[in-house]
Image (tube, rainbow, N blue to C red):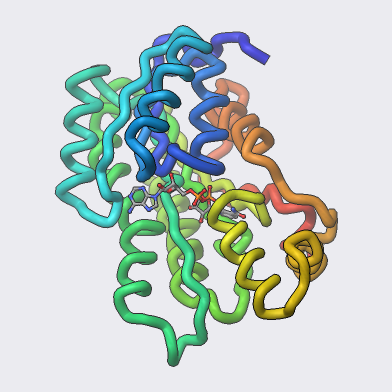
Length: 264
Ligand code: NAD
């Protein structure tokens, strides 16, 4: 529902060219926030996305291609956003990748990439966004962690370590801003059917010689009691709530939206 609760504010959503990030960017734009898009993908499709969000919700939308594994590119992104909009009121740290392997087989460069994209990038955007947020005495930092920020699964050492780390970073940020109008919280999704998870579904179907549909059901049955995927739209609505005044004393939570995954 469009009610423009975020009119005049600007939100950066990292990794918003696809999946959950795109769902959250759309939900924030629907509330009137200007959007800084980021992530990889086809240049023409990204330009189309930028103009369709801008025209659908009557907001300003820019795109910056920073590789979130690189501190210097993150600094450039934050500078461009500040020049264009003055400051970022909302930062959603969402960019993330996955790799699945036993620890002894885990490629070292994949470990480094997952830690830098899924964890260190949130440190960089936060350290660069916080001074202006504190000066304005309003801000929202939302870290997209995972059910894997709360519990583990085998073969996901780097991802689980990064997401647990992100929940820890969320708590420290919340404490350091506790007496200000800035809040920091984490969202911990269960399975969401995005390209990141589709890859795991496809690998499972191939490994087990099943159909894609059977692999989806098996994936859900293993972890997610609801038997249904969480959607980017539902996660977008939770992010909008975290940006609301009603959520101004929600600080340092790791809010799972996971079909019951971590209740087990
Ligand atoms: P996705 O693959 O659909 O989207 C990932 C986004 O991150 C894309 O826009 C991609 O271009 C961007 N990205 C990847 N590497 C980048 C880099 N180096 N620099 C900048 N952008 C980069 O994945 P998704 O499922 O939407 O995942 C989004 C976030 O949600 C991730 O942090 C993921 O860990 C988390 N998450 C996903 C699920 C799920 O089931 N899909 C569950 C829990 C948490």
